[in-house]
Length: 344
Ligand code: ASP
Image 1 (cartoon, helix red, strand yellow):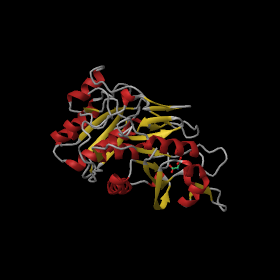
Image 2 (cartoon, rainbow, N blue to C red; image 1 turned 60 degrees about the vertical axis):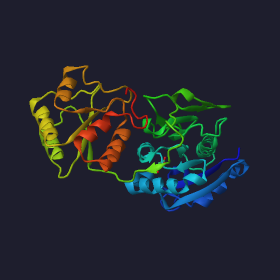
Image 3 (tube, rainbow, N blue to C red; image 1 turned 30 degrees about the vertical axis):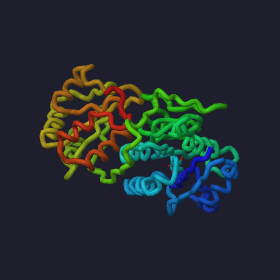
Image 4 (cartoon, protein in one colour; image 1 turned 180 degrees about the horizontal axis):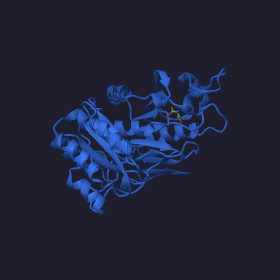
């Protein structure tokens, strides 16, 4: 294997050590991580490293980090065959989703990984995650093209499309789930790629371009029984708010109370975008299924189909960074841009 990989360290549990005073986990130096994995020297490919200074817990991730990662990949794109990003698990699905939109015409693997236990611990899951991620990022087909030219998350023997994932387990080594889309590869004795589900670029001749303008005036509003006008009204009137992700029940249902529907309708008429995603962990929004959903559709709520909340949020950030024309925004939201929704 004569590939070259850029390993980017942003922080997260994989690179943490216990603070002797408080006992809390804190990020540590990247070189110390590499010392914990002497196996990396056995790879037949070239592995260069880049570390964010200081490394962070991913709960501190902000959009400017995503921009920095996108620029770093663009700057090094022609020099490497693949990119592996070590990242905390807490917001990994958000970051992988964001990068999937920000990297346009991607033809090389960008694999996010991390771990539930620090890499220096005996029972760490970090070593296998790191080693397999590098192997996948370096893998090419018989024509020398990347096996998986997508932004992915690799974790605990499974390779997922990044913008289909959610962190669903805070303790188990299998921390992620992609409920609405099959895994892209499974790792056992062999790496089995599910080629039919991998997204390939339409043409390999387009250059990578990065989109770093993000519009972040977005709120996620989770519906719950007992939600009141006093709660919702001020949110809908936040100054400068462009869009709301409405986390609804089941297949996209919400209360039918007149005050509720009127508030949403008013906001939409004023130009607010309301995107409907389900609180369920699997399945899709279908606003034609129940009268409660039909009402939302009628007043102009947009379907998020089977999108995760993470993908819906970062897709909105991406789209709002490209255009402020509501017709364009709605059109782009309904389109499958990076494999984040199934049914279009
Ligand atoms: N809090 C850590 C982080 O997201 C958790 C982890 O990496 O698993 O950075």
